[in-house]
Length: 340
Image: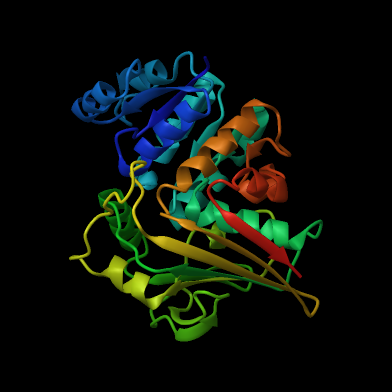
């Protein structure tokens, strides 16, 4: 049975990834910074090995990845963990996948490792998660064989957003890096702005319908999409209710509502792509943004290990995978519709 290292295995998303790997026939190797939390997780997961490793301990990271065929990094803030774990993956000669939603961390990964990963003949996939990866797949699938567009819009119809502790920490790191400014992708580049984001109405498909959203509520899609598609304008939007949840320090963490540990949160991701005056659309519906990240990340690992990739080096989901086929493979977790 092939072993896949999960860095940050004891975290909220990490636990979903561990479960998904086991369901797909892989043996997860539990690794991360907190040895006691790893041992506690191993006590509930029969037959799994624990290999603690701090990100500033290269030797321990090498031991953690020894004998594994891939690593999935679920430990934020990725501004701190991505580079050391990628370095360890490159030394081990194995592919790396992470679930980073941090815009700047994803920019760093692409800038720092594009050449080195390509020269090593391996694959590094950042943002292989609900934010960044899913939107990139939907946009790429909506465009078909085309590789350019005039505008891309990704609207997130979340009925709520109860953030994990990791989400809050990562958000704080991003705000510090931006010096409190907001960011958007316009004119073919990232722009940092001090003004307030606009509020508007987005026409989500039924049953969500027209909802008030925060415009330019930028997520990792503003990095993943233009990393491989020629698009000068990429905008993302968030329902006002979810934006209020994530902004409030009193919003609780996710609570399990089923035996799989999923919350009762629902989502609808609505993608609109404009190209030469023609609109292309794609939507994805599902439940629990953290839980759905696990099949996204594990499907990516499986496709890399079975040679179903279109690129080497650092590549986001829409570049490295066959987007429509990838989305079809997630039919148990997502309901996807593509239309022109």
